[in-house]
Image 1 (cartoon, each protein chain N blue to C red):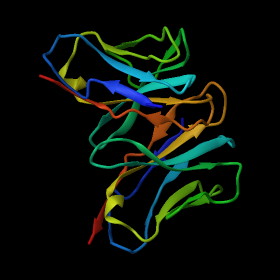
Image 2 (image 1 turned 45 degrees about the vertical axis):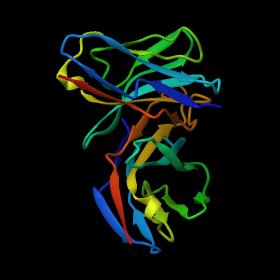
Image 3 (image 1 turned 90 degrees about the horizontal axis):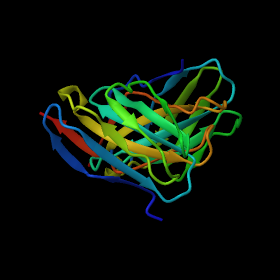
Image 4 (image 1 turned 60 degrees about the vertical axis):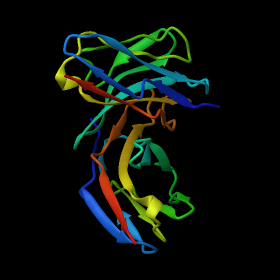
Length: 113
Length: 116
């Protein structure tokens, strides 16, 4: 089991560029989510999915899109990058929806210039 | 909405000593789960320990144990026999046990330094 994988590990973008952060899990988890981590803020939920074809917004969804066409993959798209989106992004997944332990990917450090 | 508070931004401990990290939370729910995650400099989020609210017994994992006080809404983490590898940021987190609310709510973290 690879667990939760994320690519790339590092990325630098210019303001206005778009990109997709990839996330995949091989544990057949129903629930997947994206968080961003900023200094002094802990982790904040961007979007989540409770199964293929079902997504919903978290606390800080603006400027991000997600889709879930398969159980394994949950990409996060930045539509038009802004410096405020400079952050570390984590993907997580869990078995079961209520109370399940979430397992995290290694993170992507994104810098927007 | 649930909130999680970690009142100690930084803590330090001597190697082989014991340290306790504090966490309080606010919720109106009776069914929920609490977690401690460790984030070393590698930035990987690693699950340390998990506690189900319906269980009265405090969870333990080797040198890590919790003091879960449901009425006080307190969930502290005790690290015994601290090791240099325990140095990391520690996050307390809450997850509802109620269907439809899947969000994991984090505190802002406590940075633990272990002195040799």
